[in-house]
Figure 1 (cartoon, rainbow, N blue to C red):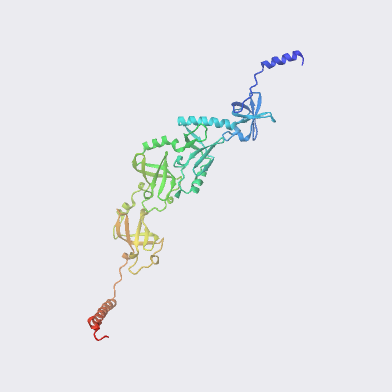
Figure 2: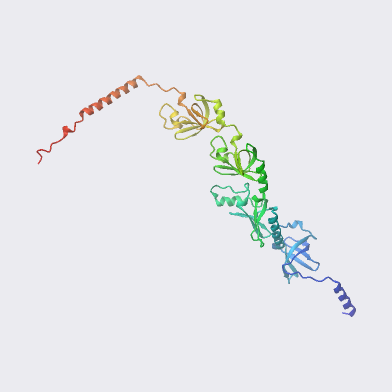
Length: 404
């Protein structure tokens, strides 16, 4: 190389920016050169080319939003001598940023949104760029909490799997510096709403709530972050043996607030309607005749469906004047029958009915009376004869005298 060329080269070299070779672990902001199906090529300070392979992209970046010239924050993992490229990670840079942000959210109690990616029997897992954090079952709001008879773990898991992929509004309630134990709470996120909702409720208010769960003796309903229960006895004025016949999960139902003590709420569905016992008492009295379908028959009772879900009862002894061995020989389920009211107590909620009271009892014939009298006389005669023929003890006593 000629002296002049060498001089020019040294001059240009002295004017060029210093080459800063990135160190492993550095987090830097560089420019996207090209987005391929599984990789991202990055311009590193106009001095190197970096590569983000698919497994280092993570799950929080939508590749369709990245174009040539976009800036992304990446972590340097090392270099590839064979390819002459820096190996970069978008995922790991995001992990550190997310942990930093979640720590701030924990302090500020900020509400954020997350999407669970999988479930286990203890709750929902949230995978954010390879770090898995947790929403415990106990921290789910009533609308998402698994209401399962007998706490069957398989059914709980089935319910939780149905929540995977849905967006949840949560608050960070636990975080550590390593980011290995971060706990989200859906319940904590709605605590303020819950408090405000309680302040607006008054006894005898009627509100529209959503059914969040159904068990044998309860309906669970939610409203503005509140969840309370409607006992089976407050679902309907009639007998309720299956609450699921009256409502479905997710269905809106109107309920009446019948009690409010601090944060304890008592609710009723049936009290939105007039007490059918009072309605029935205004229409009927003892000895009135009422017509209704037979809903059920047991060994000793026939049940009639009356107005308002009330059931009238006919005892076996009130079916017929004759001997009744099987009620089904006289009436059938679904059959409309007329019966006389023989007992009616709206307070204790009992109404007794009778079929035989509608039919005059058959009269006994004279022959039967005479035979009965004659039979009685015969019985008396037999007893008298038996008594006379019974020997006295002293008459059958054998003396021991003369026995060797």
